Image 1 (cartoon, rainbow, N blue to C red):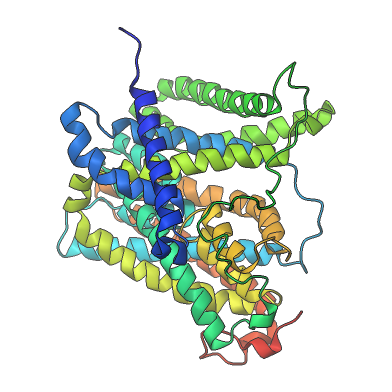
Image 2 (image 1 turned 180 degrees about the vertical axis):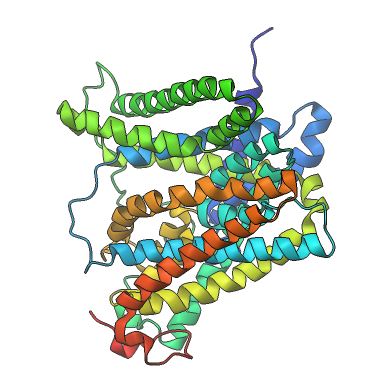
Amino acid sequence: MSIQWSMFINLGIISVGLLLATWIRVKVNFFQKYLIPNPILAGFILLPLYNFVFPLLGLTNLNLGAMAYHLLSISFVALSLKTPPMKKPGKGRIFGTTLSVLNQFAIQGLIGLLLTFFFIKTTRPDLFHSFGYLLPLGFAQGPGQAYSIGESWTAFGVEGAGSIGLTFAAIGFILCSFGGVFIINYGIKRGWIEKDKLGFNIDKDTRPGVHPKGSKLPVGGYQTTETEAIDSLTLNLAVVLTGYFIAFLILTGIEYLLSFLGPTGAQLAETFWGLSFIFAALVGLLMKQILKATDTQHLMDNLTLNRITGFSVDLMVASAIAAISLVIVAEYWVPILTISLIGAVAVGFSTIWYCSRVFSDHRFLRTLLVFGVSTGTLSTGLALLRVVDPDFETPVATDYTYASGITFAFAIPYVLTMNITLKTFVTGDYIWFWLAVLINLAYLIFTMLFFLKYAGKRLSKHKSKLWYPIEEEVD
């Protein structure tokens, strides 16, 4: 039979992995205690199988990276189509949230680049100069971005960057889960948040990750259509996939125009394909404006779009981890481990120190969310926040929703300049590498200058303390 089954075989395998991971989470207290998301567990279950067992059966992990690439862009279209919440932002802390996330981009970028320079000049002269950028890509942006941008570097002669980026993302997920739970428990012990102000008691009924039989179930989505005509999920998904198709057509047109520039144009086109999620998000924003102009935005349901995003992210995370090539990781394990460990320490200390001073309300919750999105994805950040604010009764999650748009706008130039270091790899001229370092430094200075404004008097007191004392918290 000539029909191709490879995509559905991979989807079936990932689905089995997700089901097995869900069963393990329900049965094993360890994974409940550290809030390990099921897709991460599924990815690690499938990782050795895709590296050592399935290739013997003629099934490789090559298509998994492509799957993560597409699912990332689909999730960005769905997120961009959502209608912002009507709730007022909490005490003007939106830009503070943006600053906190951008601060992590800069810190992780500087650490990654400077350690890359160290390895090139000592033990790994063959290391590609953009290697260090895979730290903020994997930690602060996620597996989809790390893979898609890393793979686009093949146009410059860099091989295996996509798999290395997925490795950094997997390490970030581990840090997010274990580190996040440690911060929660340590914060309670040190008095960073008072127990009577917690919106939770890490509920034994919710830890398994599934609702117990007979419990009141939350609403997952609303019908905006009559199902005899078209299902509401079908309509919402059709709009999302149409947006991604438009992004594909735009990128195809750009690639055609750039082809007239020769090899340089081809490299630039490859870079744009690696940034397809940005084009997908922009198309989603444009489509939202068209829906508003035609008075049809009410047909898009935020909860349904959340389900589409959640579906995409869950599959993306599981497939991204399973797609890691252990052969490539083994080749680069020393710089990967070194940069990851130093980056992890920097993320832990800098988020706590920065966020406890830049915010004046719900500081511990905001710190937890920023830590989560700086080591994983928005979904892992929200998972940590849900531990202490299960019903999102505080404005923290809402503020991040508003802030994510601003963060995205500020992050675009950062992402677009990542290829500067590849010019050093191709030409050997270090002026491009140090220009990339200066760009990260500029982002760091930018976030610190505004930090001075937001932190105010909190800068002049308790300078040596990691956490700014809670007794001066503003409620």
